Length: 427
Image (cartoon, one colour):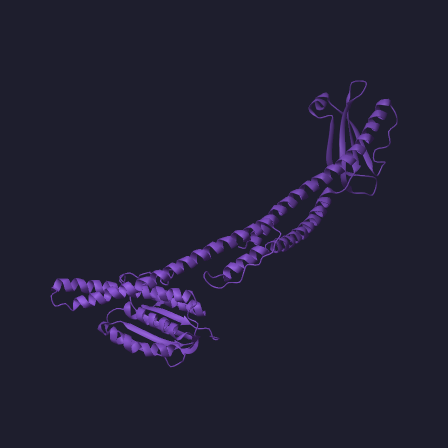
């Protein structure tokens, strides 16, 4: 979930709870205020009646007023002891003639006459229908609640989205950034301290990464270049030693093993140099190359080399697959995919090469089960049982594809390991 949506959701939830709590408090505050005003008027009316009653004055007839109503009755001393002497209550009463029962507020006073007898005066006054008031308040509060919540969500989304623009710009720049390539500078203007500090820290981190990457490339290139000559010298010397007839069979066997190790090291060294050259952009030539034609030209030599494995090769290269790229890199890309298919194939296995739908596909039998997609294109990764290979063939193919914007995909289906080079239509 996006950060702005998380923030908006949490703020909206907090405000929704706050508004709901406020609505409940608002309702009870209104009811309390209405009761307070009514109770004051009702208390004054009841006390004036009690005063007149105790003074022997003539009281108004019961039910004569359309706003007030009272009832005086005798009560026992036990009743007076067990009941509060002043009690307020919400009830219903009938005021005047022709009126039905209406909502009323009542107060009950228990008082004692001069002769010691106890009396209770219950006074009523008309009031609003609190059920109707509650329904009206609830209706309008819900309407206000929905409008406010919708407004809060919209305002929060706009505010958070607007505030998050610098962060979105940084993420977009990072998505487009490629280490070791020419990248657009990060131009992010913001007044938000945290984003400005994040941008500065990110820029410094990228600079450190670029410097370290350049140093590593330079080291690998220099080391590989310096190693090439000693390796060639050692190989030549061993070849000269093998021509010596005085060597025993055991000595010659050891020299052959050493020669094989040196050739493997030399192949690894050349591959590393190629990777460095590709990363450094040293292949600048561009020609219209048919990748299917390149595969068709390379297959006969590879079939002869791997003839001992009796691999059945099927090709379907009728549809040209053109790409504008350096011819040397086209050979590197296709040859490494084909060598990988031969090297990791099984004796008596199958290999198919086809070009169709804007893609070159190389599929081969091999190890049962899919390979690790996250590792097969990494330098020096060896599939199970093939630790003797350099582990750079697929890394070179991936580097060439990345250089020209091709997609190199791996799938496993029906016992076939398939590598597919997808060339964009404009390429």
